[in-house]
Image 1 (cartoon, rainbow, N blue to C red):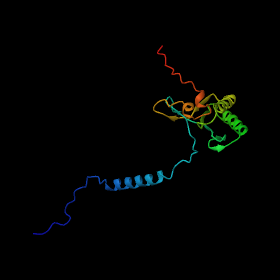
Image 2 (image 1 turned 60 degrees about the vertical axis):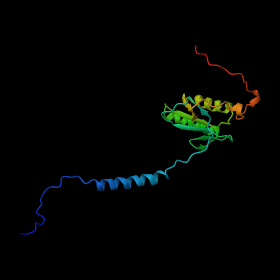
Image 3 (image 1 turned 90 degrees about the horizontal axis):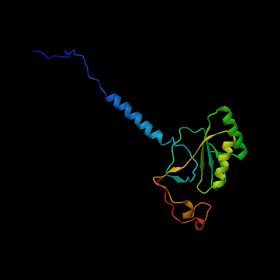
Image 4 (image 1 turned 45 degrees about the vertical axis):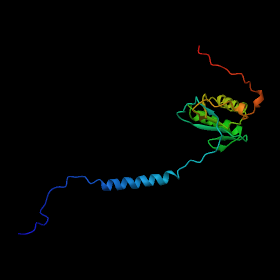
Length: 164
């Protein structure tokens, strides 16, 4: 007539996942808190919209034309001469240089062409234009008063796409 104390010597075969879940939740909270502080600082450029944009695989050099006439190389303000030297140096270090060109909506078309020509003249054949991806083709900027062409100089004759 006695009580049985600790006589059960069976092996505990169950895995206790409670400590594992606790650790995962702590790691999740740490990621949530730190993710908000790991925000890349960026320069606000009002990019034009286009519906046919494609993502680029990699970017070696980021070139930006600002609305105030400034020129940036990877976020740092440079002169055209400094940019030319940097492009030559990048081409000498790596034959597969890719430039991502971004320009504010209001930058003159000629200035963007000048930058593309400068990139090509340094032997860099791969470049892409940065845009904001739009769901549909946006209206012509000149027809809504943006850009350098006055709205009155834009022809209003509709053009239909040929199916041939």
